[in-house]
Length: 120
Image 1: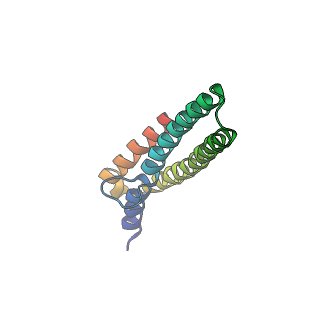
Image 2: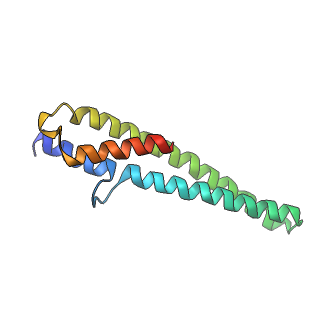
Image 3: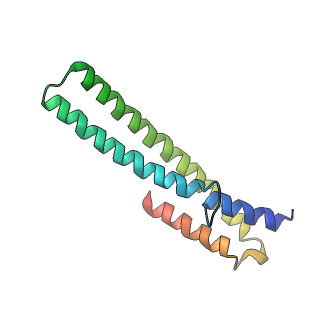
């Protein structure tokens, strides 16, 4: 496989463009949004339990759920930052190939990268 073809394939994989099986950046963005919503939801449940003086086991369990969700937010943020960095490096490398300058995968990857930066 030529260097250009390999770079094009990596653009598809890392940016998650088209119908790729491993859309890292897009997948991590979605996961991060879901975990952030989960933190809010579990936080409300914990507040409700503490306000109504619920069972100590329920309060402890809800507290653990909030903590786990917060850990997942941190973990997903780290993975998203790493994937975004890898995509930036790949885009820099891809721009060195003249035949990829107008490639649709390159344009899509740039769009995904700018969306990742704006959502961070």
